[in-house]
Image (cartoon, rainbow, N blue to C red):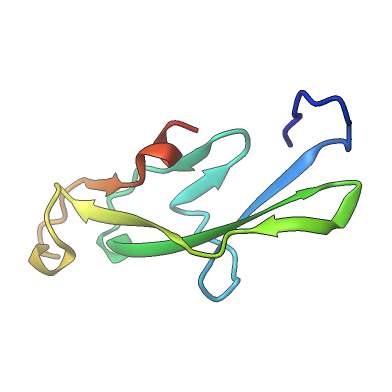
Length: 105
């Protein structure tokens, strides 16, 4: 939940993240409480691009919300290489590439 310093108080805000199919995001990779977090993993099956949307609403007014019109992409890469270059017999630590605005949340 978030609070915004505003002359009009509509209460706490809910922020939800979901994938292109409006399904929940992979909780093995992503977490969100007050910050959006990309978790560390060594699972090579998690390598790839994740298109993520978000929805923001007031908890007291759930019918009033804003939803992202376009997804942002988080790419899970192995040591900075493209997923097609990963040798699954020798999995490397997984790193991620995300938009600067998301990293700064």
